[in-house]
Amino acid sequence: MMNNKNNFFNKRSVKHGSLSILLIVAVVAIAVIINLFVGMVQDKGIIKKLDLTPNSLYSIGDISKGVVNGLKEDVIIYALFDSATINSIAFSQIKSVADQYGQSKHVTVKYVDPDLSPGLINSIDPTGLKNIQKQDFVVKCLKTKKIKVLTYAQLYNDVTDQTTGQVTSSSFIGEQNFTGAINYVTSEKTPVIYFTQGHKEPTVESDYSSLKTQLEANNYEVKTIDLLTNNKVPADAAILLVVSPQVDLAVAEKQLIKNYIGNGGNVVFLFDSLEANPKLTQFQDLLSNYNVSLDYDKIKENDLNRYLQSPYAVFIDAPQSDIVAQDFTPLLLLNSRSIKVLVNQKDYITVTPLAMTSSTAVGEQIGKSDGKNINGVMDVAVAVDYKGGSAPGKVLVMGNGQFVSDSASQVPYYQNGFNFFTTSLNWMMDKQDDIVINSKSLDPALITISSDAKANTIAILIIVVLPLIIFGFGIFVWLRRRHL
Image 1 (cartoon, helix red, strand yellow):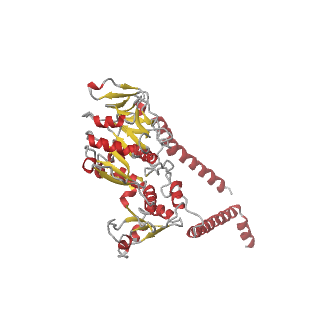
Image 2 (image 1 turned 135 degrees about the vertical axis):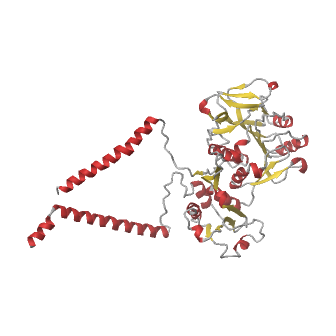
């Protein structure tokens, strides 16, 4: 009997089986211990969770880390949500990002249900002017008392399917909004950008709300002004922004803007190519003071690789320069006009091209009386340093205003344009060191297969070859173990 037991335990199959069980138990035990250890050290802040998503959706970047680590004032981020929402899967991305701001010694993140703390909103904003609501984020600096309210919707860029009308989130802009809000509330002074009105420009709230949001995220305050009725440029104007005018300036407005630039002001002109082809005589006369002129054309690209769907939706070169410190090539612009740099050189004027077409582009004249088409490389955006007044002024002129509109924000290809524009404004404000925080795409990373043959090969490998290899390996192991 004893011999039978010994023979049983001495069998190779029993030995190997016992070894397998021991190895399985050991691996499970090690996994449990590692998980307990990792959980413990994460709770104590010794190590952090790893974000393995392609676009680092659950993390903040080095720019934001630099901002919060350089803070000297204390900031509180209030998340006004109930506990069920805070702990939901849908909220996990935002919570993960917000918590990383809270790792700074000067930033505190508080998750509070306003229904359970009825006096909280009033204590945050006693005046009630900010209209804080449940499911808002509120960023507040304890020293300046400045407040920035971020709605949940402001943390995502939404895209509307033109066929179905369905609205989906295409990118996450929470990081740039949180970082911008922190910059805003901790700054003693916030530069104001005035959008002009009175020239049939699109409205800010209905046509340029996405641009307004991005400007506010980069620590600008946005207002509107009608120069003809106000008779002056406000003293707090850091930048005057003229977007897509369809009628000309009045002579009085032209003089106001000229005086503003001469006194050290900054002005941005964004001109679209207009089918009605109005002659912007006063604008032309104003721009000539800065060695710049408008062409009355519409840019068309003849290279199939340099336009998107329409030859008038052109990919423009916007290389890195002393003014724009990042390379934004390609820059997609639809229905643009070219900008002409005048030849009369003046020592107190420096004109720098920022964006230009390829040599295969053509500037098609809209009116028959406007002359011949323009062939070859054309400037689409130029920057002007003007030192002919009492203080240095700056002018930015672009032959497109649609690229930063709300309709453009619905197309991922146009995101480069928003960032190019914001970076150009940073040059105007002598903030070239500021780097724009890009949005993070929510679209899954896809592998593009260039041909049907490659697609079929990959399908055969995955569906047929790989399963056969696994099956064959399994048969081989089974046969080996059968003879043990």
